[in-house]
Image 1 (cartoon, rainbow, N blue to C red):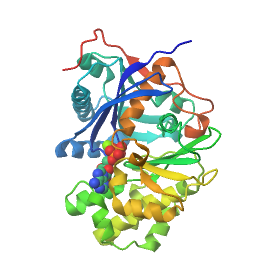
Image 2 (image 1 turned 30 degrees about the vertical axis):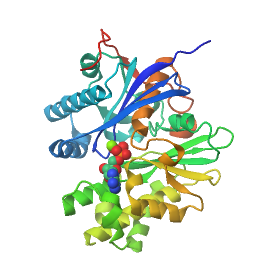
Image 3 (image 1 turned 120 degrees about the vertical axis):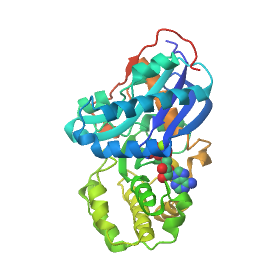
Amino acid sequence: MTTQTLRAIGLMSGTSLDGVDVAYLETDGETISRFGASATLHYEDDFRADLRRLLDLAPSLAPDDPFLKSVEERITRDHAIAVGLIGRAADVVGFHGQTILHAPERHRSWQIGDAGLLAHICRFPVVHDFRGADIAAGGQGAPLAPLFHAAMAANLPKPLLVINIGGVANLTYLGPDGEILACDTGPGNGPIDDLTQKFFDTPYDKNGEIAANGQVDHARLKQLLAHPFFARPAPKSLDRLTFSGLIAQATENLAPQEAIATLTALAAAAIAQTRLPAPPLRVLVGGGGRKNATLMAKLAAAFPVPVEPVEAAGWDGDALEAQCFAFLAVRSLRGLPLSLPGTTGVPYPMPGGITAESNTNRPCR
Ligand SMILES: Nc1ncnc2c1ncn2[C@@H]1O[C@H](COP(=O)(O)OP(=O)(O)O)[C@@H](O)[C@H]1O
Ligand SMILES: [Mg+2]
């Protein structure tokens, strides 16, 4: 059987709420035959603040809440603009949407975004709801990058550890015999961004400079690492706000740069202490967190092997998650699994995604 290579555009708006990443690739859902353009459309400050507010409100929001609906429409339109930035036609768009709540223990993971509207504007079929089937079957619904990481790393020496540091951090362990194990490791940039915004009126700790000027409070770090999440084996996943209360408590009365240094150490320690089947030969880091030099230095100190940005393997660390959802959209069309027992704890390899059709194939403008 020959499988068709499709032109796919992937979209990701992560828990950092910084913007939407978009990327083009060509794939049959198993191997990637070509990479294309990628871009990030940054959200405007007021919209990022609205999204942040929505995360706090999400647990008590009705599905037809007017604020929710207005944010959903705006985010969908921003995604349509992002698709337009690619400037070429596609057979499918993978639209992750914006997670505003993630509660796998309650069989709930809520991504906002109107796939029908996006398909209507772009005139391409849009695959969305990537996590629903996994969650419904009792899986974590996250992380979903592992099968893409495995395809990207097909020819790299194993064991290999791929880390993504977004608002939440997650890892993929790729074993020598094709084993794939994955989990969220803990908070990533999310709580650091919250504090830089609050104390320095800046959206993130550029290059980790604030953390570099602060002392880690080891007692508080220990208090944070005592949370039972960290002792649980993979697979496991997190809501962006799981640690909010604990972090607020643990950083109370700390000088802002001390608190930021401590949260940076927490992100690194949580990754480094995740139990793996075997020590990796190499650690590759993607996501915006790889640009935080203090975080990268802490990771490098925690692993006895090279810790490098994914660019060291020729990958694009800014586009990786968007490329992932282009890849998963094609897998969805083909009915291939998006997750495995080792990646989300789902009972068997799980296909997923729902396709919103468009009625013409006119490129988005
Ligand atoms: N130069 C930088 N220095 C430090 N942190 C950075 C830098 N650039 C981006 N980041 C961090 O990366 C985040 C965005 O990362 P991203 O991979 O898009 O995460 P997500 O998938 O959660 O949206 C920003 O919010 C910020 O915390
Ligand atoms: Mg982002």
